[in-house]
Image (cartoon, rainbow, N blue to C red; front, side, top):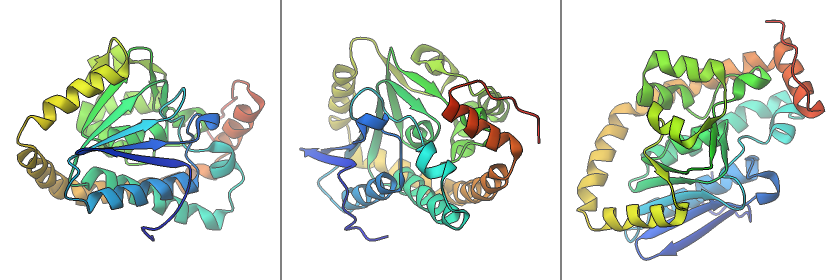
Length: 263
């Protein structure tokens, strides 16, 4: 993908050694469409090449971090021939974020759901506002998690707990997510103050040593993450063909409870 991809759906602000990458579709709760995904990849690659930036903050403009993939445009109306290229873009985004030679923080306010939650899990450290809601809720529309969620959840909470989180698909508060080991910190008095304190602390440390540790672990885990992303891509394609997914999408659009039949 060209590093020069231009979109107004992603904002980049650099202050000193800190870059903030902001998802900018507040009217859609920062649901990720293809332009936003490509924009995120390009901004992260741009940051990756800068020797002046040590910390990357990922955030969402407005009331939510990200409500996930844009269901109406990315799932329900997509031509089947477009599906794998979109999944490949998601994979590129996740690998780029996970491997970037910077320290990464997700600053979550409001909802982080589905692919939005997967994106947050790909960062090194997650701070969630005490009023935020997190959900790995693909199951609600008869799908499996993507964006590397199977990899990240297993790494954070273990296989058994990861399966329960995926199968339940329920909305969690920040405190529950913290107790489960899904996030690192709850912001009790507003996200910005907690975020600033974390950044100040990290910038006072030997950051290059921290980044080197990250790079070693990322390099070791990269083959497994790539394999998971591939399995998610083909698994998701299968799920899109099920009657349960079609019912899930229909129920989502009609704002009613789905009637799943296991088919």
